[in-house]
Image 1 (cartoon, rainbow, N blue to C red):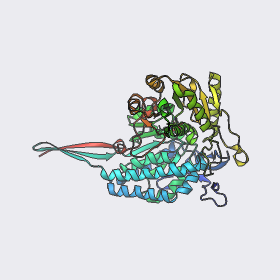
Image 2: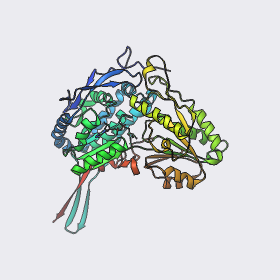
Image 3: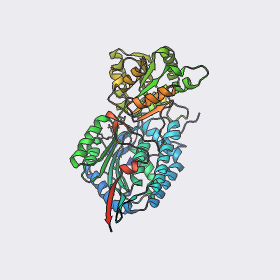
Image 4: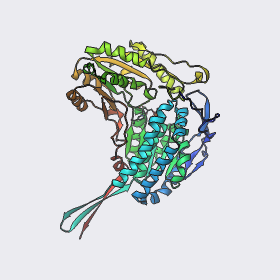
Length: 499
Ligand code: NAD
């Protein structure tokens, strides 16, 4: 096992700046009047840097810069923009280890994940959109002998992007790559819990972009996010965060009649059918790994499989094995390369999860393992750790219906296929789902019947750039990955010519 040195200590790969201002027009600037706020590492609970506290004035400055840069960037050729995205990907990859450590320190997630998943996925996202951009074509239709119609793709202009704290850099990459590929300029607001990761990365890649093409305003939702999302000067608002915030964003957008895309919360079901118990088949072990995915990223994943639905025939056997598998996941030092689960991202999030552990008990759910804050020693004593927790209960309980966003799974049984689908869909959300079965017919029917934007079969938690990702119902509007995103960041112009 290796432990990376904490940022700024002896042997560390990186240090943070003591403060992160806003990044506007290609340079770091101090806040106009908002001052600074403290940024704590969830690993230790200690303050390690400060972020600028953005207000409407900072947002206006950023919009000025984005508007100034928009015409020239929008006129660059696809080949030029593609080359910029590829350079960003290469530069990010060159600094991948340091960026992974930085993200771990700010968010609390284990470095094995930032190294193996978050950062490589961010790099790939830039490469993917660099590629699909080159393959995009307009169209010409001959309508009759002397009439033709041309369709052009036009960038939207200046887009607002607001992201959460659970994947600080990956969420930024998911939003920036398609928007930039499509020829837009951007004002991005990171979450107030993680203001540094995006800036730290920008410090490494900013020279690859013309000034004003990407602008970042830090700060809180009401103070910085609202003026950005409410501005008539943005052509689109792309938001990822809680469903309740998504409703507000849609209201702001309605005032100015702007398009929105919303990537919101989830309460994703993971369905385990009896037939995974075949002799000499490793699918059952794979399914147990799939069950344990509820603790990935400390459960702070929008698609977290936070409801496990297990078929009645082998319910007891599967649950015993699933609890035993869960007990192998112990919270540990996020900078150790073997740690499977790290710290929750903020004290507020820790309190929210502990509150739900209490709610579950009061509702009469049974705690099969975990159920408490995880106390750790030394420098981790002040950090925000929670034991992976398995509840057994009923799908109408709050712990089955509300997004906890922690390492907590709520388990219940189902009778047959129809019962499984009924319980799976008995939620306000529709983001992710898992289906574990050897039967291709069951898999196909479940794939059709479950209301979710992403359904994994005999797998969970994979996010390739070319697979469309997004939610239905209260989980959102629009998609986030896949080449279709170019259309979401462009408008179509038709020119009809008669000779
Ligand atoms: P949040 O809604 O509290 O905050 C998200 C962002 O919105 C932050 O930058 C915040 O400052 C900003 N914000 C808050 N209030 C605002 C307002 N009134 N106007 C404008 N901006 C405002 O969400 P969070 O707690 O940071 O993130 C966790 C949530 O994000 C979870 O619900 C999770 O499921 C969701 N999420 C969804 C996806 C997805 O792709 N569907 C991905 C990651 C996270």
